[in-house]
Length: 123
Image (tube, rainbow, N blue to C red; front, side):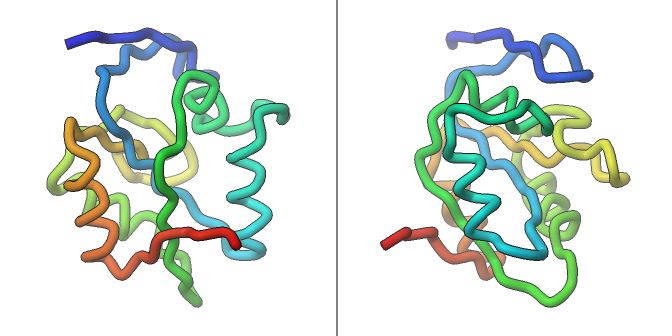
């Protein structure tokens, strides 16, 4: 299995396996603006996901509208099944990670749908 290393902000160098990754984040205001920011190539490097996306391609985006922040609840559900990258995206909470790995994209999609998430389709 091929592996690649990348510098992820203050986390430093991390080795990533080929496969699929699901990132769990939140956008309590203006989810469209947050997603569009992540899709842009030229942006200020601010979050762990910004550094990761320099080396990755977004295949699918899932979202869930909520009144309260559910980011950590979603991350804990992903962590119960998938391997994670320690501390990724979780510097402001007690989660072990917000980035999860699978060899199979379908398993990640299934989990997202099971948690009530919808696929992002920008028209």
